Image (cartoon, rainbow, N blue to C red; front, side):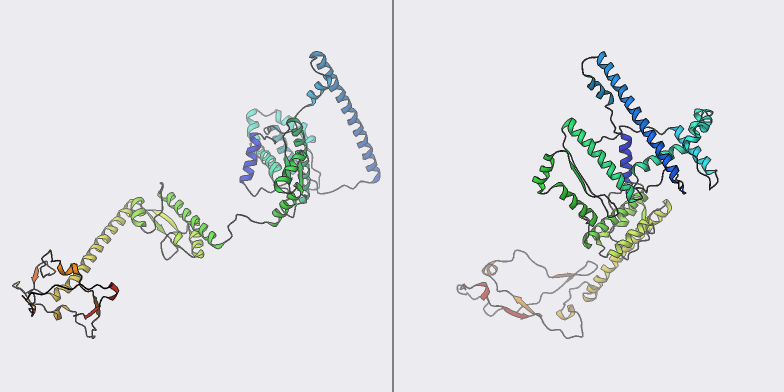
Amino acid sequence: MTRYSPAVSDLLQSNFARWPPKERYPNRYRAKHRVYQDAEVKARAKTVRAIRKQELVEALDNARQAMWALAQSLRKTFGSHSIKYYHQLILQTSRLHSQTHKVSRWNAYLSQEVRRINSELQPNMQHKKSSELTAQISVQWKALTPEEHDTVTANAVEELKDKRENRATARHRLPVQAFHNGCGTLKKMKHELQMLNLRTGIECAIISTRGDLDTYNSPYYYATSKRVADFFEATFKTNLADIGLCMEAYLISRIQVGVVSNHVQELLDLKKQTATLILCKLNETAKTKVPRMYYNNFKTSITAKYGVICEGWPLSKFCCPSNVGSRTELMVLNHVFESSSAHFRAMGTKEFKKWQDKQFQAAIGGVENREDSGSDMSNLSNTILTPPSTLAPATLTPSTLAPQSSAPTTPLPMFVPPPTEQQRGTPLTANFINAVTAADGLGVLLNAKQRKRRSDFGKKRGPHKVQTMDNENLPITIVNAQ
């Protein structure tokens, strides 16, 4: 493969980063009129071309003879190889561009002056060529100092660099130009790969197709040897020609593989893009590295630490983009942050101090409200259980503890499981005191109700018979809630 110089590599990389490529523009002036010649003039011009061609052939023969004479002299001087070897050694020069020459300031000045002189001509006058004005402009160039050379040609050098880049990488405007350029380049590549294979034995394959219907080039393929073609047939079960046709059909059909096409994936990508954009805007405003964006605790996690507030939030709820399910709302949210309609703002010192005081007062008010709500709940117990002034024990009946309601209440059934054997024989291990406290913390003692003594109190009973039955068959006792 061709190894490009660093300058050419940088040029190609810059053009790829600037995709789509720049539009190609003409690099020279072309006359808009055309001169039609008669047959006598054409015949005379044809004769002149034939004579010039014959002179060129004779000059090339003389040059070849001179090169052969130089090869003979090298053979006599060194004598270790044949004359043909030295002849090939003299003519062996690479046609590949190994490096790029710098833009000559003289060429830049010449181009600049030629454009200036032609711009001063009348519209119907023929433009002059640079070869006609070289002698005149050369006198002016030699009269300038080196410092003046740099000053005068500063803009012209940049223009020539831009023209060189445009000529090398810009896309052709006409399909026929792209067709001839593609054919010529592929022909050169084929020849270079053939020479590379002969010199080094490296095997290569080329498959080129057009990328759209506007291009005229047909699929082109080339393999340096039959072994390469056999490899494609053995591996892909097809030949290079079929691969080229399939590649052309794929490129022309514009099939997009790997591109997100479903609504769910697009929505996820939009959420991720919006969240990243909001975090970037927050870092720019805070002028520091904020690890993550907090939406639920924005005041305590962002504003209290970095002094940043959000203005212009378009949605009704301040939440993370991942919690927004509407595509329209996500697009609106993304657009307002891109256009800076919604933005973060860093508060000043005084404003931040006022904000802190306001948050402190709000926190105190919230605590007082919670204490007031707790005292309201305790008032209910005060109205139900009001101790006398003498703190004497009072007798409370169930009717005084029950809430007063005009609606009739229906007792709800309650499941009471039967006592087990362990519950019957296990005595209580703690003493319970029947006491009630008021809202102020003072205790209200209650008199325990005297229960009626059982009729078999003090009488000895026989052994208890244990019933063996499944839990599913246990009797269920339903009692009414008092």
